[in-house]
Image 1 (cartoon, rainbow, N blue to C red):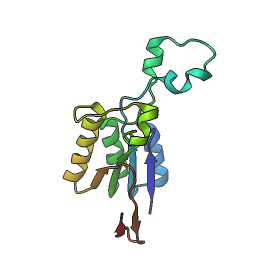
Image 2: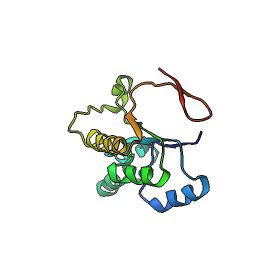
Image 3: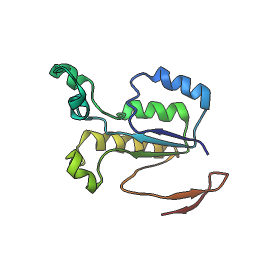
Length: 147
């Protein structure tokens, strides 16, 4: 069973994943972070910075996952059997930290729905995770149990 976790990968430079694919080949499961708007750099790292950062630079270095185009590039490159979108900060216990309130029109929801629909149209199992999911596989990647 081969798994690629790309929670905080924005796939800005696909050449990196070209090299990774040459090393590891296709994967069975792809976990993909699609919080594609992301907080500005100073949201997390501001207290560590010794100098004020210009707003345009702060906004250009966002803590984001992949959007649809960058996510589907990973799907095309690694040919996974299953795709799981996660790391979007939707879980209720994160409301106190992240203050993210998605709607069906929110960019990350629209982008991840599009990616999931595209995967399903290709016969690739795909879903957006929420909270917790447990799946047990055998050596042939056959699902034994899902909770």
